[in-house]
Amino acid sequence: MAFAAALIGSFVLMAAILGVQPDLAAEARQPMFWAKAAFALGLAAAAFAATHRLARPGVRLGAVPAALVAPLAAMWILAAVVLVRAAPGERAGLFFGQTWLSCPFNITLLAAPVFVAALWALRGFAPTRLGLAGAAAGLAAGAAGAAVYTLHCPELAAPFLGVWYVLGMLIPAALGALIGPRVLRW
Image (cartoon, rainbow, N blue to C red):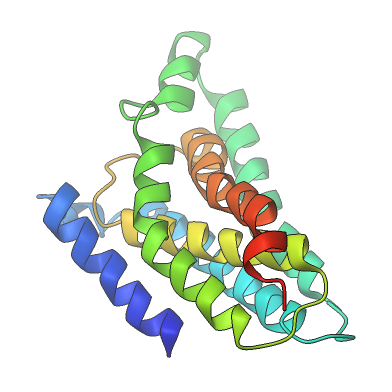
């Protein structure tokens, strides 16, 4: 419940501060828009599964690490194919896009409500691997923030997504790893 409420908070934050992309309907007709959304949602689902498992002592991660790697590997393979096929003069544009300076920080901003809710929810359980649980919660929040950010972000190039979206997801994960041992201690 906390995750769902926080995700709504992320949508409200995106709409109020960044705004929805004006040509979202046209962009949604492009397959890469849906690949971008699937990438973020796939990572969010896998990271939420990791958070759920790490919330309880003795529960193994099972196939969750593979579920985390799959969307990353798919995006990075797609990025490599796009870069190899692109003319040398186009590669920098595919990598940096137009929003590389703001993208990771916007994702982190939109992850904040989910991050706070995830840590709050984790405190109600008994995680024993506090740093890892905090990192998983941060990654889940970062990926959820990236999923929300797809409604604002005009970038569709796989190389851009494979670097700057991932960085935006890793910032909350790193914060979670750092503060998890303090915040989640019971």
